[in-house]
Image 1: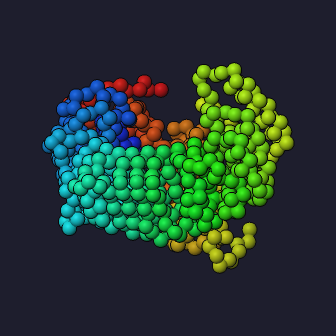
Image 2: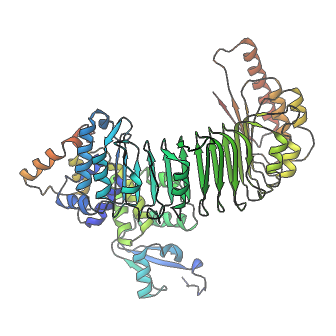
Image 3: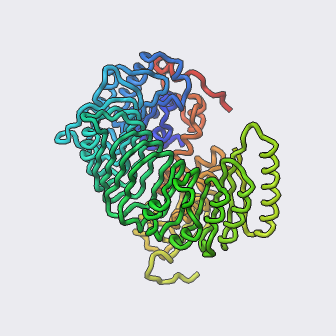
Length: 419
Length: 160
Protein backbone atom coordinates (compact mmCIF):
# COMPACT_ATOMS: atom_id res chain seq x y z
CA UNK A 1 0.00 0.00 0.00
CA UNK A 2 2.94 2.30 0.58
CA UNK A 3 3.82 2.14 -3.10
CA UNK A 4 0.50 3.31 -4.42
CA UNK A 5 0.81 5.82 -7.25
CA UNK A 6 0.06 9.39 -6.28
CA UNK A 7 -2.98 9.50 -8.60
CA UNK A 8 -4.55 6.57 -6.76
CA UNK A 9 -4.03 8.39 -3.45
CA UNK A 10 -5.61 11.48 -4.97
CA UNK A 11 -8.57 9.31 -5.95
CA UNK A 12 -8.97 7.93 -2.44
CA UNK A 13 -8.78 11.46 -1.05
CA UNK A 14 -11.45 12.51 -3.53
CA UNK A 15 -13.71 9.74 -2.27
CA UNK A 16 -12.96 10.93 1.26
CA UNK A 17 -14.23 14.30 0.10
CA UNK A 18 -14.70 16.06 3.45
CA UNK A 19 -12.19 18.92 3.56
CA UNK A 20 -11.18 18.36 7.15
CA UNK A 21 -10.34 14.68 6.56
CA UNK A 22 -8.51 15.47 3.32
CA UNK A 23 -6.40 18.12 5.03
CA UNK A 24 -5.49 15.72 7.84
CA UNK A 25 -4.56 13.01 5.36
CA UNK A 26 -2.36 15.46 3.46
CA UNK A 27 -0.21 15.85 6.58
CA UNK A 28 0.84 12.19 6.59
CA UNK A 29 3.80 12.46 4.24
CA UNK A 30 5.14 14.33 1.22
CA UNK A 31 3.54 12.04 -1.36
CA UNK A 32 0.15 12.52 0.24
CA UNK A 33 0.58 16.26 0.30
CA UNK A 34 1.35 16.18 -3.41
CA UNK A 35 -1.68 13.95 -3.98
CA UNK A 36 -3.81 16.54 -2.22
CA UNK A 37 -2.34 19.38 -4.22
CA UNK A 38 -2.23 17.86 -7.68
CA UNK A 39 -4.62 14.92 -7.80
CA UNK A 40 -7.58 15.86 -5.66
CA UNK A 41 -10.67 16.30 -7.77
CA UNK A 42 -13.46 16.46 -5.18
CA UNK A 43 -13.70 18.43 -1.96
CA UNK A 44 -16.57 19.30 0.33
CA UNK A 45 -16.94 21.83 3.16
CA UNK A 46 -20.17 20.80 4.79
CA UNK A 47 -21.48 21.59 8.25
CA UNK A 48 -23.29 18.24 8.16
CA UNK A 49 -19.95 16.40 7.93
CA UNK A 50 -18.25 18.19 10.79
CA UNK A 51 -20.01 20.12 13.50
CA UNK A 52 -16.89 22.07 14.49
CA UNK A 53 -17.54 24.33 11.49
CA UNK A 54 -20.51 25.72 13.41
CA UNK A 55 -18.22 27.01 16.18
CA UNK A 56 -16.07 29.02 13.79
CA UNK A 57 -16.61 32.63 12.84
CA UNK A 58 -17.58 33.35 9.27
CA UNK A 59 -14.26 35.06 8.61
CA UNK A 60 -12.35 32.04 9.93
CA UNK A 61 -14.37 29.79 7.64
CA UNK A 62 -13.72 32.01 4.64
CA UNK A 63 -10.00 31.90 5.37
CA UNK A 64 -9.74 28.15 5.77
CA UNK A 65 -11.88 27.47 2.71
CA UNK A 66 -9.75 29.83 0.64
CA UNK A 67 -6.50 28.36 1.98
CA UNK A 68 -7.60 24.83 1.30
CA UNK A 69 -9.02 25.42 -2.18
CA UNK A 70 -5.97 27.43 -3.23
CA UNK A 71 -3.70 24.51 -2.42
CA UNK A 72 -5.48 22.26 -4.90
CA UNK A 73 -5.31 22.27 -8.65
CA UNK A 74 -7.73 20.79 -11.13
CA UNK A 75 -10.66 20.64 -8.71
CA UNK A 76 -13.73 19.18 -10.41
CA UNK A 77 -16.31 19.05 -7.65
CA UNK A 78 -16.71 21.74 -5.00
CA UNK A 79 -19.30 21.68 -2.22
CA UNK A 80 -19.72 24.50 0.25
CA UNK A 81 -22.78 23.76 2.37
CA UNK A 82 -22.90 25.66 5.63
CA UNK A 83 -26.22 25.65 7.43
CA UNK A 84 -25.45 28.22 10.13
CA UNK A 85 -23.58 30.81 8.13
CA UNK A 86 -25.68 33.87 7.30
CA UNK A 87 -23.55 35.06 4.45
CA UNK A 88 -20.09 34.79 2.94
CA UNK A 89 -18.36 37.90 1.63
CA UNK A 90 -18.55 38.37 -2.11
CA UNK A 91 -14.78 38.64 -2.48
CA UNK A 92 -14.21 35.24 -0.90
CA UNK A 93 -16.87 33.52 -3.01
CA UNK A 94 -15.59 35.18 -6.18
CA UNK A 95 -12.06 33.99 -5.34
CA UNK A 96 -13.22 30.38 -4.89
CA UNK A 97 -15.17 30.38 -8.14
CA UNK A 98 -12.51 32.10 -10.22
CA UNK A 99 -9.82 29.74 -8.96
CA UNK A 100 -11.78 26.66 -9.99
CA UNK A 101 -13.26 28.12 -13.14
CA UNK A 102 -11.34 26.13 -15.74
CA UNK A 103 -11.94 22.67 -14.33
CA UNK A 104 -15.15 22.75 -12.28
CA UNK A 105 -17.78 20.14 -13.14
CA UNK A 106 -19.94 20.20 -10.04
CA UNK A 107 -20.84 23.08 -7.73
CA UNK A 108 -22.94 22.78 -4.57
CA UNK A 109 -23.34 26.09 -2.75
CA UNK A 110 -25.97 27.18 -0.27
CA UNK A 111 -24.82 30.34 1.49
CA UNK A 112 -26.05 33.83 0.83
CA UNK A 113 -23.39 36.12 -0.57
CA UNK A 114 -23.03 39.74 0.51
CA UNK A 115 -23.14 41.75 -1.65
CA UNK A 116 -24.94 39.42 -4.05
CA UNK A 117 -22.71 37.66 -6.53
CA UNK A 118 -23.95 36.61 -9.93
CA UNK A 119 -22.75 33.05 -9.52
CA UNK A 120 -23.80 32.07 -13.02
CA UNK A 121 -21.50 34.63 -14.47
CA UNK A 122 -18.44 33.80 -12.40
CA UNK A 123 -18.44 30.05 -11.99
CA UNK A 124 -16.92 27.78 -14.60
CA UNK A 125 -19.51 27.19 -17.29
CA UNK A 126 -17.86 25.12 -19.96
CA UNK A 127 -17.49 21.87 -18.07
CA UNK A 128 -20.19 22.31 -15.44
CA UNK A 129 -22.44 19.26 -15.21
CA UNK A 130 -24.18 19.76 -11.87
CA UNK A 131 -25.22 23.08 -10.35
CA UNK A 132 -26.92 23.06 -6.98
CA UNK A 133 -27.58 26.55 -5.61
CA UNK A 134 -29.47 27.74 -2.57
CA UNK A 135 -30.16 31.06 -0.87
CA UNK A 136 -28.81 33.19 -3.66
CA UNK A 137 -30.22 35.59 -6.20
CA UNK A 138 -29.92 35.15 -9.90
CA UNK A 139 -30.09 38.50 -11.60
CA UNK A 140 -29.93 38.64 -15.33
CA UNK A 141 -29.29 35.63 -17.53
CA UNK A 142 -27.59 36.34 -20.86
CA UNK A 143 -28.28 33.28 -23.00
CA UNK A 144 -26.15 34.54 -25.84
CA UNK A 145 -22.90 34.38 -24.01
CA UNK A 146 -23.80 32.50 -20.85
CA UNK A 147 -24.32 28.96 -22.02
CA UNK A 148 -23.94 25.79 -20.00
CA UNK A 149 -23.16 23.24 -22.71
CA UNK A 150 -22.59 20.32 -20.34
CA UNK A 151 -25.08 21.03 -17.56
CA UNK A 152 -27.19 17.97 -16.85
CA UNK A 153 -28.61 18.76 -13.44
CA UNK A 154 -29.84 22.12 -12.12
CA UNK A 155 -31.18 22.58 -8.63
CA UNK A 156 -32.34 25.94 -7.26
CA UNK A 157 -33.57 26.21 -3.67
CA UNK A 158 -34.73 29.42 -2.04
CA UNK A 159 -33.33 31.28 -5.00
CA UNK A 160 -34.80 34.51 -6.21
CA UNK A 161 -35.07 34.67 -10.00
CA UNK A 162 -37.43 36.24 -12.47
CA UNK A 163 -39.74 34.05 -14.54
CA UNK A 164 -38.03 35.28 -17.68
CA UNK A 165 -34.55 34.52 -16.36
CA UNK A 166 -35.63 31.03 -15.30
CA UNK A 167 -36.91 30.39 -18.81
CA UNK A 168 -33.68 31.75 -20.34
CA UNK A 169 -31.54 29.73 -17.97
CA UNK A 170 -33.22 26.44 -18.88
CA UNK A 171 -32.84 27.32 -22.55
CA UNK A 172 -29.15 28.03 -21.99
CA UNK A 173 -28.66 24.40 -20.98
CA UNK A 174 -28.96 22.34 -24.16
CA UNK A 175 -28.27 19.03 -22.36
CA UNK A 176 -30.24 19.54 -19.17
CA UNK A 177 -31.92 16.41 -17.84
CA UNK A 178 -32.84 17.11 -14.22
CA UNK A 179 -34.47 20.27 -12.89
CA UNK A 180 -35.30 20.90 -9.24
CA UNK A 181 -37.00 24.06 -8.01
CA UNK A 182 -37.58 24.41 -4.29
CA UNK A 183 -39.29 27.43 -2.87
CA UNK A 184 -38.15 29.82 -5.57
CA UNK A 185 -38.95 33.48 -5.26
CA UNK A 186 -40.26 34.27 -8.70
CA UNK A 187 -40.15 37.97 -9.43
CA UNK A 188 -42.85 39.01 -11.83
CA UNK A 189 -43.19 42.05 -13.99
CA UNK A 190 -46.93 41.97 -14.51
CA UNK A 191 -49.87 41.01 -12.35
CA UNK A 192 -50.12 37.39 -13.40
CA UNK A 193 -47.45 35.17 -11.89
CA UNK A 194 -46.62 32.64 -14.54
CA UNK A 195 -43.66 30.48 -15.46
CA UNK A 196 -43.01 28.88 -18.82
CA UNK A 197 -40.17 26.44 -19.30
CA UNK A 198 -39.17 24.61 -22.41
CA UNK A 199 -36.59 21.86 -22.97
CA UNK A 200 -36.50 18.85 -25.21
CA UNK A 201 -33.87 17.09 -23.10
CA UNK A 202 -35.45 17.40 -19.64
CA UNK A 203 -36.17 13.98 -18.16
CA UNK A 204 -37.03 14.75 -14.55
CA UNK A 205 -38.69 17.79 -12.99
CA UNK A 206 -39.29 18.36 -9.26
CA UNK A 207 -41.06 21.47 -8.04
CA UNK A 208 -41.70 22.23 -4.39
CA UNK A 209 -43.34 25.12 -2.58
CA UNK A 210 -44.19 27.24 -5.56
CA UNK A 211 -47.22 29.48 -5.88
CA UNK A 212 -48.18 30.54 -9.38
CA UNK A 213 -51.14 31.45 -11.52
CA UNK A 214 -49.80 29.55 -14.47
CA UNK A 215 -47.04 26.97 -14.97
CA UNK A 216 -46.42 25.67 -18.45
CA UNK A 217 -43.80 22.99 -18.94
CA UNK A 218 -42.90 22.01 -22.45
CA UNK A 219 -40.76 18.88 -22.34
CA UNK A 220 -40.86 16.35 -25.15
CA UNK A 221 -38.71 13.80 -23.33
CA UNK A 222 -39.95 14.07 -19.78
CA UNK A 223 -40.18 10.88 -17.73
CA UNK A 224 -40.65 12.01 -14.11
CA UNK A 225 -42.77 14.85 -12.82
CA UNK A 226 -43.15 15.51 -9.10
CA UNK A 227 -45.01 18.49 -7.61
CA UNK A 228 -45.06 19.04 -3.87
CA UNK A 229 -46.66 21.66 -1.70
CA UNK A 230 -47.62 23.86 -4.63
CA UNK A 231 -50.51 26.25 -5.18
CA UNK A 232 -51.25 26.55 -8.87
CA UNK A 233 -54.22 27.70 -10.82
CA UNK A 234 -53.16 26.27 -14.12
CA UNK A 235 -50.56 23.56 -14.73
CA UNK A 236 -49.94 22.30 -18.20
CA UNK A 237 -47.48 19.71 -19.41
CA UNK A 238 -46.89 19.79 -23.14
CA UNK A 239 -45.02 16.80 -24.44
CA UNK A 240 -45.03 13.67 -26.51
CA UNK A 241 -46.55 11.35 -23.94
CA UNK A 242 -43.24 10.11 -22.54
CA UNK A 243 -44.22 10.59 -18.90
CA UNK A 244 -43.61 7.47 -16.82
CA UNK A 245 -43.75 8.71 -13.25
CA UNK A 246 -46.26 11.29 -12.00
CA UNK A 247 -46.42 12.41 -8.38
CA UNK A 248 -48.36 15.17 -6.70
CA UNK A 249 -48.26 15.74 -2.96
CA UNK A 250 -50.19 18.44 -1.13
CA UNK A 251 -50.85 20.44 -4.25
CA UNK A 252 -53.80 22.66 -4.98
CA UNK A 253 -54.42 23.09 -8.68
CA UNK A 254 -57.55 24.11 -10.53
CA UNK A 255 -56.66 23.10 -14.05
CA UNK A 256 -54.27 20.18 -14.40
CA UNK A 257 -53.33 18.95 -17.84
CA UNK A 258 -50.66 16.31 -18.42
CA UNK A 259 -51.46 15.77 -22.06
CA UNK A 260 -53.58 13.40 -24.08
CA UNK A 261 -51.04 10.62 -24.50
CA UNK A 262 -50.61 8.82 -21.17
CA UNK A 263 -49.88 5.32 -22.37
CA UNK A 264 -46.36 5.32 -20.92
CA UNK A 265 -47.41 6.13 -17.37
CA UNK A 266 -46.08 3.50 -14.99
CA UNK A 267 -46.47 5.19 -11.61
CA UNK A 268 -49.15 7.60 -10.46
CA UNK A 269 -48.85 8.84 -6.88
CA UNK A 270 -51.37 11.35 -5.60
CA UNK A 271 -51.41 12.41 -1.95
CA UNK A 272 -53.06 15.13 0.10
CA UNK A 273 -55.26 16.12 -2.76
CA UNK A 274 -58.91 16.64 -3.50
CA UNK A 275 -59.77 14.51 -6.51
CA UNK A 276 -62.55 15.18 -8.90
CA UNK A 277 -62.84 11.54 -9.80
CA UNK A 278 -64.42 11.74 -13.25
CA UNK A 279 -61.84 14.28 -14.37
CA UNK A 280 -59.00 12.34 -12.83
CA UNK A 281 -60.25 9.12 -14.29
CA UNK A 282 -60.41 10.71 -17.72
CA UNK A 283 -56.81 11.81 -17.32
CA UNK A 284 -55.39 8.40 -16.56
CA UNK A 285 -57.91 5.89 -17.91
CA UNK A 286 -55.81 5.23 -20.98
CA UNK A 287 -52.70 4.41 -18.95
CA UNK A 288 -53.07 0.71 -19.51
CA UNK A 289 -49.41 0.12 -18.63
CA UNK A 290 -49.80 1.51 -15.13
CA UNK A 291 -47.89 -0.56 -12.59
CA UNK A 292 -48.20 1.49 -9.41
CA UNK A 293 -51.15 3.55 -8.24
CA UNK A 294 -51.19 5.42 -4.96
CA UNK A 295 -54.07 7.56 -3.77
CA UNK A 296 -53.17 8.59 -0.25
CA UNK A 297 -54.96 10.96 2.08
CA UNK A 298 -57.14 12.02 -0.78
CA UNK A 299 -60.61 13.47 -0.64
CA UNK A 300 -63.21 13.18 -3.31
CA UNK A 301 -64.92 16.29 -4.50
CA UNK A 302 -68.21 14.48 -4.94
CA UNK A 303 -68.85 11.91 -2.25
CA UNK A 304 -70.91 9.83 -4.60
CA UNK A 305 -68.14 9.50 -7.09
CA UNK A 306 -65.19 7.75 -5.56
CA UNK A 307 -62.59 5.44 -6.96
CA UNK A 308 -63.93 1.94 -7.40
CA UNK A 309 -62.12 -1.34 -7.79
CA UNK A 310 -63.94 -2.31 -10.94
CA UNK A 311 -62.57 0.71 -12.77
CA UNK A 312 -59.08 0.12 -11.42
CA UNK A 313 -59.16 -3.57 -12.39
CA UNK A 314 -60.37 -2.93 -15.93
CA UNK A 315 -58.27 0.13 -16.72
CA UNK A 316 -55.01 -1.05 -15.21
CA UNK A 317 -54.57 -4.78 -15.85
CA UNK A 318 -50.81 -4.62 -15.21
CA UNK A 319 -51.06 -2.99 -11.82
CA UNK A 320 -48.67 -4.56 -9.29
CA UNK A 321 -48.76 -2.05 -6.44
CA UNK A 322 -51.93 -0.44 -5.12
CA UNK A 323 -51.97 2.02 -2.22
CA UNK A 324 -55.20 3.56 -0.98
CA UNK A 325 -55.96 5.76 1.96
CA UNK A 326 -59.16 7.74 2.14
CA UNK A 327 -62.18 8.12 4.36
CA UNK A 328 -64.08 4.87 4.11
CA UNK A 329 -67.69 5.52 4.93
CA UNK A 330 -70.85 3.50 4.35
CA UNK A 331 -71.78 4.60 0.87
CA UNK A 332 -68.16 4.81 -0.16
CA UNK A 333 -67.40 1.27 0.94
CA UNK A 334 -70.24 -0.27 -0.97
CA UNK A 335 -69.60 1.72 -4.10
CA UNK A 336 -65.86 1.17 -4.14
CA UNK A 337 -66.14 -2.60 -3.77
CA UNK A 338 -68.78 -3.10 -6.42
CA UNK A 339 -68.12 -5.41 -9.33
CA UNK A 340 -66.16 -8.59 -9.35
CA UNK A 341 -63.12 -8.09 -11.58
CA UNK A 342 -59.87 -9.21 -10.11
CA UNK A 343 -56.69 -7.20 -9.78
CA UNK A 344 -54.80 -10.00 -11.45
CA UNK A 345 -51.27 -8.73 -10.95
CA UNK A 346 -51.32 -6.83 -7.68
CA UNK A 347 -48.68 -8.21 -5.32
CA UNK A 348 -48.42 -5.35 -2.84
CA UNK A 349 -51.41 -3.67 -1.23
CA UNK A 350 -51.09 -0.70 1.11
CA UNK A 351 -54.17 0.53 2.92
CA UNK A 352 -54.38 3.33 5.44
CA UNK A 353 -56.70 5.17 7.76
CA UNK A 354 -56.54 8.59 9.33
CA UNK A 355 -59.41 8.02 11.70
CA UNK A 356 -60.25 4.44 12.39
CA UNK A 357 -63.74 3.18 11.92
CA UNK A 358 -65.36 -0.24 11.96
CA UNK A 359 -65.72 -0.34 8.20
CA UNK A 360 -61.99 -0.37 7.63
CA UNK A 361 -61.54 -4.09 8.18
CA UNK A 362 -64.47 -4.80 5.86
CA UNK A 363 -62.75 -2.73 3.25
CA UNK A 364 -59.49 -4.63 3.74
CA UNK A 365 -61.35 -7.90 3.36
CA UNK A 366 -63.13 -6.71 0.25
CA UNK A 367 -59.83 -5.76 -1.33
CA UNK A 368 -58.06 -8.96 -0.35
CA UNK A 369 -60.75 -10.95 -2.13
CA UNK A 370 -59.99 -9.16 -5.36
CA UNK A 371 -56.18 -9.65 -5.33
CA UNK A 372 -55.58 -13.32 -6.12
CA UNK A 373 -51.78 -13.23 -6.17
CA UNK A 374 -51.20 -10.78 -3.32
CA UNK A 375 -47.93 -11.28 -1.44
CA UNK A 376 -47.71 -8.32 0.90
CA UNK A 377 -50.25 -6.25 2.80
CA UNK A 378 -49.25 -3.09 4.66
CA UNK A 379 -51.71 -1.35 6.96
CA UNK A 380 -50.94 2.25 7.86
CA UNK A 381 -52.89 3.59 10.81
CA UNK A 382 -52.97 6.92 12.58
CA UNK A 383 -53.55 6.52 16.30
CA UNK A 384 -54.50 9.68 18.14
CA UNK A 385 -52.60 10.62 21.28
CA UNK A 386 -55.66 10.89 23.44
CA UNK A 387 -57.08 7.47 22.83
CA UNK A 388 -60.76 7.52 23.60
CA UNK A 389 -62.53 4.40 24.80
CA UNK A 390 -64.28 4.16 21.51
CA UNK A 391 -61.06 4.32 19.57
CA UNK A 392 -59.50 1.63 21.73
CA UNK A 393 -62.52 -0.57 21.16
CA UNK A 394 -62.32 -0.04 17.41
CA UNK A 395 -58.61 -0.83 17.39
CA UNK A 396 -59.30 -4.03 19.30
CA UNK A 397 -62.06 -5.00 16.87
CA UNK A 398 -59.79 -4.22 13.99
CA UNK A 399 -57.03 -6.40 15.40
CA UNK A 400 -59.44 -9.28 15.90
CA UNK A 401 -60.70 -8.96 12.35
CA UNK A 402 -57.19 -8.83 10.94
CA UNK A 403 -56.06 -11.93 12.81
CA UNK A 404 -59.06 -13.78 11.50
CA UNK A 405 -58.51 -12.46 8.00
CA UNK A 406 -54.83 -13.39 7.90
CA UNK A 407 -55.70 -16.93 8.94
CA UNK A 408 -57.59 -17.24 5.69
CA UNK A 409 -55.03 -15.53 3.51
CA UNK A 410 -51.90 -17.40 4.47
CA UNK A 411 -49.98 -16.41 1.34
CA UNK A 412 -50.10 -12.77 2.31
CA UNK A 413 -47.34 -11.25 4.43
CA UNK A 414 -48.93 -8.59 6.68
CA UNK A 415 -47.17 -5.49 8.07
CA UNK A 416 -48.54 -2.79 10.34
CA UNK A 417 -47.26 0.76 10.61
CA UNK A 418 -48.90 3.00 13.19
CA UNK A 419 -48.10 6.61 13.92
CA UNK B 1 -11.50 -29.81 -19.43
CA UNK B 2 -12.60 -29.37 -23.03
CA UNK B 3 -12.89 -25.78 -24.17
CA UNK B 4 -16.02 -25.11 -26.18
CA UNK B 5 -15.47 -23.23 -29.40
CA UNK B 6 -18.56 -21.05 -29.08
CA UNK B 7 -19.18 -18.00 -31.19
CA UNK B 8 -20.81 -15.89 -28.46
CA UNK B 9 -18.39 -14.39 -25.94
CA UNK B 10 -20.96 -14.48 -23.18
CA UNK B 11 -20.91 -18.23 -22.74
CA UNK B 12 -17.14 -18.56 -22.93
CA UNK B 13 -15.16 -18.92 -19.74
CA UNK B 14 -11.58 -17.90 -19.11
CA UNK B 15 -9.21 -19.73 -16.77
CA UNK B 16 -7.24 -17.62 -14.33
CA UNK B 17 -4.29 -18.93 -12.34
CA UNK B 18 -3.42 -17.16 -9.10
CA UNK B 19 0.07 -16.44 -7.79
CA UNK B 20 -0.23 -19.42 -5.47
CA UNK B 21 -1.12 -21.81 -8.29
CA UNK B 22 -4.89 -22.17 -8.01
CA UNK B 23 -7.14 -22.02 -11.05
CA UNK B 24 -10.48 -20.20 -11.19
CA UNK B 25 -12.99 -19.88 -14.01
CA UNK B 26 -14.57 -16.59 -14.98
CA UNK B 27 -17.02 -15.59 -17.71
CA UNK B 28 -15.42 -13.84 -20.66
CA UNK B 29 -17.75 -10.89 -20.24
CA UNK B 30 -16.61 -10.46 -16.64
CA UNK B 31 -12.96 -10.78 -17.73
CA UNK B 32 -13.58 -7.84 -20.07
CA UNK B 33 -14.16 -5.66 -16.97
CA UNK B 34 -10.63 -6.37 -15.77
CA UNK B 35 -8.44 -4.55 -18.24
CA UNK B 36 -5.23 -6.30 -17.19
CA UNK B 37 -6.84 -9.69 -17.78
CA UNK B 38 -8.26 -8.57 -21.12
CA UNK B 39 -4.84 -7.35 -22.23
CA UNK B 40 -3.35 -10.73 -21.35
CA UNK B 41 -6.13 -12.49 -23.25
CA UNK B 42 -5.44 -10.30 -26.26
CA UNK B 43 -1.75 -11.19 -26.11
CA UNK B 44 -1.96 -14.86 -25.16
CA UNK B 45 -5.32 -15.94 -26.56
CA UNK B 46 -8.40 -17.05 -24.63
CA UNK B 47 -7.68 -20.76 -24.61
CA UNK B 48 -4.68 -20.45 -22.36
CA UNK B 49 -4.85 -20.21 -18.58
CA UNK B 50 -4.08 -16.59 -17.76
CA UNK B 51 -1.42 -16.20 -15.05
CA UNK B 52 -2.03 -13.54 -12.40
CA UNK B 53 1.17 -13.34 -10.38
CA UNK B 54 -0.01 -10.67 -7.98
CA UNK B 55 -3.45 -11.98 -7.14
CA UNK B 56 -3.94 -14.91 -4.78
CA UNK B 57 -6.53 -17.57 -4.08
CA UNK B 58 -7.74 -15.75 -0.98
CA UNK B 59 -9.01 -12.69 -2.79
CA UNK B 60 -9.74 -13.75 -6.35
CA UNK B 61 -13.02 -15.55 -5.54
CA UNK B 62 -14.40 -12.38 -3.93
CA UNK B 63 -13.46 -10.37 -7.01
CA UNK B 64 -15.08 -12.94 -9.26
CA UNK B 65 -18.19 -12.79 -7.06
CA UNK B 66 -18.40 -9.03 -7.55
CA UNK B 67 -18.15 -9.18 -11.30
CA UNK B 68 -20.58 -12.07 -11.55
CA UNK B 69 -23.15 -9.69 -10.07
CA UNK B 70 -21.97 -6.85 -12.23
CA UNK B 71 -22.53 -8.57 -15.57
CA UNK B 72 -26.10 -9.42 -14.60
CA UNK B 73 -26.66 -5.83 -13.48
CA UNK B 74 -27.44 -6.89 -9.94
CA UNK B 75 -25.04 -4.68 -8.01
CA UNK B 76 -27.22 -2.83 -5.50
CA UNK B 77 -26.39 -0.73 -2.45
CA UNK B 78 -27.42 -3.69 -0.29
CA UNK B 79 -25.11 -6.05 -2.15
CA UNK B 80 -22.20 -3.62 -1.83
CA UNK B 81 -22.84 -3.10 1.90
CA UNK B 82 -22.96 -6.85 2.42
CA UNK B 83 -19.80 -7.33 0.32
CA UNK B 84 -17.63 -5.20 2.62
CA UNK B 85 -19.48 -5.80 5.88
CA UNK B 86 -17.21 -8.47 7.31
CA UNK B 87 -13.97 -7.36 5.71
CA UNK B 88 -11.34 -6.09 8.11
CA UNK B 89 -8.95 -3.30 7.13
CA UNK B 90 -6.27 -5.68 5.86
CA UNK B 91 -8.69 -7.68 3.73
CA UNK B 92 -10.00 -4.48 2.12
CA UNK B 93 -6.46 -3.37 1.38
CA UNK B 94 -5.61 -6.69 -0.28
CA UNK B 95 -8.75 -6.57 -2.44
CA UNK B 96 -8.04 -2.95 -3.28
CA UNK B 97 -4.49 -3.68 -4.42
CA UNK B 98 -5.75 -6.64 -6.45
CA UNK B 99 -8.43 -4.50 -8.11
CA UNK B 100 -5.73 -1.93 -8.88
CA UNK B 101 -3.45 -4.59 -10.39
CA UNK B 102 -6.29 -6.08 -12.42
CA UNK B 103 -7.35 -2.60 -13.59
CA UNK B 104 -10.92 -3.50 -12.60
CA UNK B 105 -12.36 -0.03 -12.52
CA UNK B 106 -15.76 -0.48 -10.96
CA UNK B 107 -14.51 -2.59 -8.06
CA UNK B 108 -11.54 -0.25 -7.68
CA UNK B 109 -13.74 2.84 -7.30
CA UNK B 110 -16.07 1.02 -4.92
CA UNK B 111 -13.17 -0.10 -2.71
CA UNK B 112 -11.58 3.40 -2.89
CA UNK B 113 -14.81 4.72 -1.41
CA UNK B 114 -14.83 2.03 1.26
CA UNK B 115 -11.24 2.81 2.26
CA UNK B 116 -12.08 6.52 2.34
CA UNK B 117 -15.03 5.71 4.62
CA UNK B 118 -12.64 3.92 7.00
CA UNK B 119 -10.41 7.03 7.16
CA UNK B 120 -13.20 9.44 8.08
CA UNK B 121 -12.45 11.49 11.22
CA UNK B 122 -9.22 9.62 11.83
CA UNK B 123 -5.90 11.07 12.91
CA UNK B 124 -2.75 11.60 10.84
CA UNK B 125 -1.04 8.76 12.72
CA UNK B 126 -3.92 6.41 11.99
CA UNK B 127 -3.77 7.14 8.27
CA UNK B 128 -0.01 6.66 8.26
CA UNK B 129 -0.33 3.32 9.98
CA UNK B 130 -3.15 2.16 7.69
CA UNK B 131 -1.15 2.85 4.58
CA UNK B 132 2.23 1.92 6.01
CA UNK B 133 3.71 5.31 5.14
CA UNK B 134 6.65 6.88 6.90
CA UNK B 135 6.52 10.48 7.94
CA UNK B 136 9.12 12.09 5.69
CA UNK B 137 8.57 15.67 6.75
CA UNK B 138 11.33 17.38 8.74
CA UNK B 139 10.26 18.48 12.23
CA UNK B 140 10.17 22.08 11.00
CA UNK B 141 8.04 21.19 7.99
CA UNK B 142 5.72 19.13 10.15
CA UNK B 143 5.16 21.86 12.74
CA UNK B 144 4.55 24.39 9.97
CA UNK B 145 1.99 22.07 8.37
CA UNK B 146 0.21 21.50 11.66
CA UNK B 147 0.11 25.21 12.34
CA UNK B 148 -1.41 25.93 8.93
CA UNK B 149 -3.89 23.15 9.34
CA UNK B 150 -4.61 23.72 13.04
CA UNK B 151 -8.31 24.06 12.36
CA UNK B 152 -8.52 20.49 11.09
CA UNK B 153 -6.99 18.88 14.16
CA UNK B 154 -9.92 19.62 16.45
CA UNK B 155 -12.02 16.72 17.64
CA UNK B 156 -10.12 13.73 16.29
CA UNK B 157 -11.63 10.32 17.05
CA UNK B 158 -9.64 8.19 19.48
CA UNK B 159 -7.52 5.74 17.50
CA UNK B 160 -8.69 2.17 17.88
